[in-house]
Structure formats: C-alpha cells, structure tokens
Image (cartoon, rainbow, N blue to C red; front, side):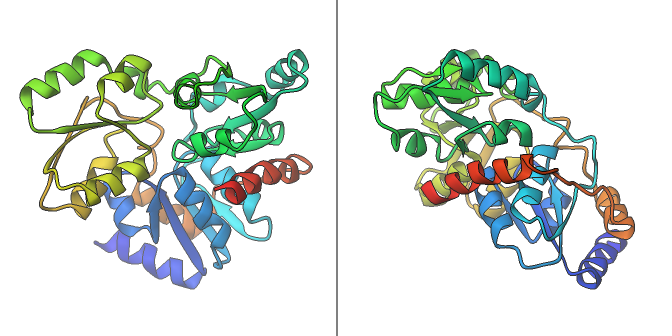
Amino acid sequence: MQIAEEILKLKCQKNATILAHNYQIDEIQDIADFTGDSLELARKASEVTAEVIVFCGVHFMAETAAILNPDKTVLIPDAGAGCPMADMINADQLRDLKKQHPEAKVLCYVNSTAEIKAESDCCVTSSNAIAIAASYPAEQEIIFVPDRHLGAYTAEQLKRKFILWPGFCPTHARLMEEQIQGARHRYPDSVVMVHPESPKPVRDAADQVLSTGGMCRFARESDRKMFVVGTEVGILYRLKLENPDKQFVPLHDRAICPNMKKITLEKLLWSLQEMRSVVQVPEPIASRARNSIQTMLAKS
C-alpha cells in the first residue's frame, strides 16, 4: 500500500517510533512498531530511544508518553481522539474529594488526564491495579478515580472498601449479563473473557476478568479453542493474528470506542509529514504526573 510505504519512509527519516493501543484499527496495528495495553504502552514509552513518538491511541495515552519523554516530540494523529471517562472528573473535583479524605491515598486509572495524574499518588492500569492497591496497608484509605467499575473490581478482589468516583467507560457499559448468557448458548465450549471496566453483573458472569494484554496472554497459553471477548472489538484483530488456530467472537459487536477509531493511515501519514499534532504537558503538572506514573512502573 502506497500510504503505508510512505509512512515507513517518513518514520525512518524522522527517527520516529509508532506506538498503538490494542483497540486501534487493523491497519494501524499492522504498521505500529509496538502494540499493547495501557501498561505495556507506558513501559514501552519509557524505553523509547527515537526522537519522535507517534501515539496511535487516545489523548491521555499520548499525554503519558509526553510526560515520560519531556525531551522528545510526541504526536497524536488526531487531536480530537479523547476519552469520555477521563473527562468525567477534573482536578478541582479530585482536590475537593481529597479534602474530604485527607488521609487517603489516591489511585488513578491511567485512563485519566495529566491533571488527575498530578493530583494522584500512583497510577494503575487494569492489569496491575490489584497488585498496586495490595501494596498499601489494609487500613489505608484509598480513593480510586475515575472508573467505578475497575475500582470496585479491585476492591472486591482485595476484600476492601474504596472511595469510588462514579466514572465509567461508555463502550464497556454496553456489555450486559444477558449477552453472556446468549453467548454461552451459541458457543457452549467457549471461554468468556471480559475487561474489568465492565459492570459487575458482566464481570460476575464471565469466566475470566482480564486487561487486554491479559486476554492476549491467556488466549496464547490456554488449550481452549473458542473465546468470547467482552471488550472493545479492536482487540480481536491481535487475538486472531497471534492465535490463528483459535476462534474469537465479540461479546457485543457494537462495543466500539469511536475515539479509538479516529486514527487512520491517512491521519498517521499527515501527522508525520507535518509533525502534528504535538502533545505537550506544562510544568509543574508534568513533573507531578510523572511521579505517579513512575511510582506505578516501580510497583509493577
């Protein structure tokens, strides 16, 4: 494909690395240097040696890369690729919540803005939230923002009670327990995997509750051949690519994040051609947010 060839040519000329989230469209995953979930991408962003990082995901992910690489140029091919859940809390709201619970530690899902990360003690992802929360004493009060479903799941696994912000992912909110019942009827030999951003009835009805990276690992290591996947449908491409001898079907074929689908090969090409859109995080927000991200990476 001519566009892909031009992207690869420009990538070399500009000493760029392309990072893509598991929910990106197939063509973007194909051309990326690295595809992963939030934790995998945060780790990779902290190791990049290229001068330019082109982040194919949503804005908070590109912000994270910029925070970890203040000396590099970070681009996002579509500046309008946002995250509704990240926008469900702002810094003033979190500061007010902290005043109500002055002894609490704040854990923020990485699906949050730089300002929220700056107000937090530690970031978490869906793959490490349980382990990181467990690193705090059982008596430690914990505020968890912004996703109430991941926060509740983490608290349940640790048999603790968190102070939860009422945010949620609209894409995962589409998933329902009835869909799992229907999938079990259609695919009786399947394993049902769902993301911890899913509502509790969905999590409780599933066989496995996993991050997207966890789904990929589980599918590779399992001897089962049929999987029902309860998360954004973009992950199916990677699952099928890595496991050609296995079958994967979506729990809900309309579990689509419109923001994740905004980035196309054309936009990626224009981003490299014109060096747009640059993502920058001002100080002192960047330094404070970097602390919460690096604390997560150290605890992981």
